[in-house]
Length: 497
Image (cartoon, rainbow, N blue to C red; front, side, top):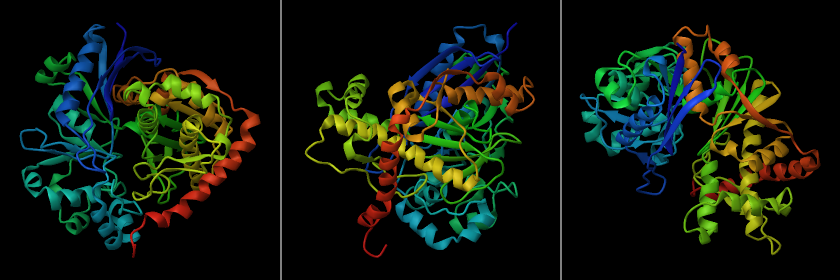
């Protein structure tokens, strides 16, 4: 009987379930779309019940295609950081705040002024906590604006951890998803930190390693998902980290570009070095990497397609966008797009900065703007990798891309030209599921560690070679892109900030 590993990825736009064999071949997959709620500017919420319904639906769909007894274990992957408040009965309290939410601006400023770099290092092994998308600022916002919900809350979980709770009845998270709250050096939540926040430390879940067993499929979740009762569920980790594992980013010098709703860039390094621009992590006992998420990626293209191509009635005609952009030469004839539509995370971490087209002239038309959007995201990818190379004292030797954006050969070519490095495209686009399955395979004893799981299960579809003729054009345009943020930053600051 063959052995199958399942992966479940709780993303922002959809929930994906996929089944793999031990060589990384995708056997069957399902993708169920979930809604996003933005009730106020800067807010981003989702209903945890939508995650659970989509998880059940996607798992049932894939399990219907195989003999259920072939599944050895299930690994979890999910968006992060988020805040799912859960009551004593295991039910979510209201909507969850998700990763792109920017509401906790005031709380972030308080943290930046109240917690020094030294305290932050001693409490959570991070240098900086004063950012609106980070967990501490969100906790303070909940304490101030939703005290009645916090009073009913018994544990605060991430998206994939809430699904893990529904599947197994066990509430826990992994060491990567607990960043900025848990101290990975002392392996505990620091009481002094939570005293400073005035948030009960009892709301924090138990912390596991990504490849640790979370629990087993219980009777009710077996009926809901089609997974056999007793199937092992592995804790898993952040979706970008699962993508990174799937793409080989645990290998020094190997970079991974996860082209999803936002871009998430990783670079394998030799030792755990970092600064304020990045996170350092690992998904096993080896394989350190730097990781930095942007605030927008494919979502930027969606925004542009809906707003600038009204003839398609609010839908995005990606083929038309690529057709128009391909008619414009590399560098968009001097037009630069800054993709900071919702602030920016790595590597500048500035919630107040905003995007824009810089260098517009009478020569430029809609097609120029279209190409500039593709290129602007490419510049953001290079910006992160340039910073990572300095931090890790290492050169990028290879780049793997995955996620929905990797399906665009046109965009891959632009990124290869900007980076002047070959970009290898993963055979499967469900790399969050694949990385989660790799973690599950290690817990199940099918591979000794994540390095071996990656070597056996990582597969490429094609490689995009850089066009040397575009190197100088993109070098000049990229340097202009890098010069713009310091110039524009003061324009988006209130007096006295």
